Length: 277
Image (cartoon, rainbow, N blue to C red; front, top):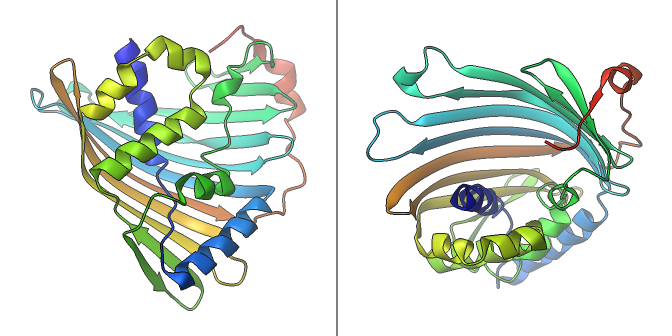
């Protein structure tokens, strides 16, 4: 179980490697302006498309998960709404992909989540929500920029009429260092102590076969408009290898235009209170 949790967290950590800096004076100037703009971002709408393929050498069929999510976030005080679909297929082991609808509200320290199996809304309050996992670092662009600004030197730089485009592919050691730093920020202290040396062991047995990141920064506002991650890595867990390929695109729009997020009354009235997910 601990190995599974570690693998999941490390996958998220590697996917979070989506910002960069460089010794080039012009790039540093653009980067610093982007950081200033990111720190001023207090709300945005976000669209995420993701495809992940997990396979092991001993098995012919890979597990493929595809998801499309749209949502909105306000950073202070934290509020969010996410809605989308996820499909999972496992080759010949499944006649057809399993599809799930997902929707979540988090407002005023209360979370409402739609269970697509029972078609019920579930409610949790701040006494039962694992608050350490309600983390904005994957959505807050200033957190992302701050976390990675000292690490990446092999930055490629392009520009179009409307955007600056940063591209980078960190080496093995840079990737592992970034993942460790990112995990420190997103993992609850209690879970960190429970996992002990698991994280270190997995990192030492992880090979990044391919990692490319593109970040698009608007010229008119220096806001991060889009980033794209293409990743292929192999992890060795208890003598078994797991290959993970992931392609993810995130688009920000309508930045600083969202005043509030409301939970519909019909959801509040019908939701079933639970002690935890």
